[in-house]
Image 1 (tube, rainbow, N blue to C red):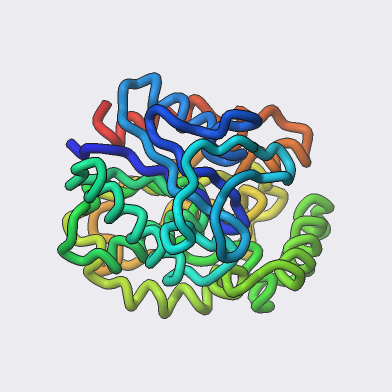
Image 2 (tube, one colour):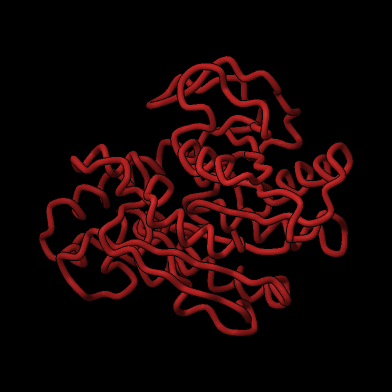
Length: 298
């Protein structure tokens, strides 16, 4: 069994560094993505750490945005902090540096990685970056990770168009907002979560996950159409097929268990926007937590 669980948030997320004893003192303790999952795993008796992440290069001291946080007691240096709007491989370098810190300061040799959204890609990049170094990944669990592309990336790349929404007002709005957000905020992340980019990136990851059991969890609340399968059904940001890694070849993903939550959305941001309870978001859903528990062997 791994020494610790490390939670990794995704693209455009802001998360404070947390360890089993320290978290943000005001607001959501581990940020709006990971707070509920962290609390659940701590209550299950696990040693849980959250990798710090922010929009742009720098340190994480607070998040003044929606459902943010303040009063972060432990602030890690920039080189150990994920730029959540930057490139996948740069995020992997920062996450690997964070994991090396756990090895040096907490005697961690084995780690279970749980990544939400692009956090799953960041985790894969960090595993490759570490190679044979400690800590080594014991397991990888991904929640809504765009293994094969995201709605955002494919919309920016023109691989998903408004016509593919088939008139569904929710999806039409999501596509328009995705393009606008990417134009204003991305430093590489949006362009790299397209199917076109990830097809080649995945090939470069061949062999990285050998010997590492993977659990891929996808959601698909938005289900107004069935084609194209790259879009439908989707969780607001990632298709169910992509989140489950259904089309990833065995040489890239040799050992995988796949789970679908058709009634869930990508995050509490989407739950809030579409009038759903937060427990219908992948990282706040107790039913998802039960799958995570099983994957972790608890």
